[in-house]
Length: 395
Image (cartoon, rainbow, N blue to C red; front, side, top):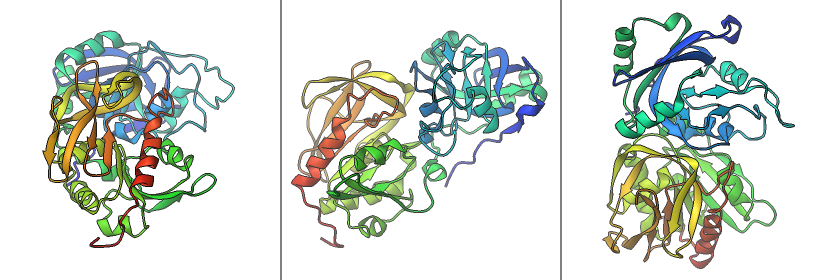
């Protein structure tokens, strides 16, 4: 059952006055006082931090941030404003936004409006003028936790605000992918000559992901998160893809069941982020919640199949629990950890050795960069070329 979304109330930008006071309250009682940024009102979510120095527009519109309040560690945000080309989806998904020093005057040839204006227009409650370094250190030590941002008429006594934060739902156990996924199938056509057809399960897919596949001659059929095995194979796929998405992978029982059927048929599979966690579960591994997660565009990962170290884009608070020191036996043959984070040895990729399937925990599409991991889409193309799919029922 889908967890209820937290209640959020906001006032339009017209009602805002300069330097409206705001306060951020963590579930352990730590508070930070600053000024309202974006919409005025109240919002709740999970407090997480992002270490990227650029790419804030892609971060805001990433569906994987649904129900999360994002703290930007870079001190100044909003320098390049907001354009109409870079969004990863049709709306901002973050529950709230926290910055230290918002840019007063955006400057970029593509800028159409300020970030403050965009946040306000889309009703995203934020806070500025706080010590984001101190907040980040607190989250690193205590872990990601529930948080509330209150501004304007929503301000009240600290005890009352804390009680409201403690009533907000936690991220652990949250079933969220259906809340952000498409409700109707759609097709992203191949660029140039069509080589393959892929059924992509939308668990919170970003716009650049099917585009990266389309650039390689793949026609991508993007399907709703609750699609059945029959729905996937109705498009005659040469391969199946599971996207990124929000929430706890322990809740994705339907998607795990679907993927096990895909693996059993020998159809080439590629998954990223949430899709990596689902592959892990399908192979029999567990998942767990990281203390504070990996979020940003500067995370070092080693591809253990080549020894190459990549700088990669991440956004995940959960991870797969699989052995790093040996090949594992699974219901679908042997599997191994193919990628690992060099900061903390977290599993960042899986590879099946007897079944055409692999996945990574990070984002090879990386619209905001870096592009070190773009080769993974080529690896998917090679996998489909080497393993012609068996797409008929019962095959």
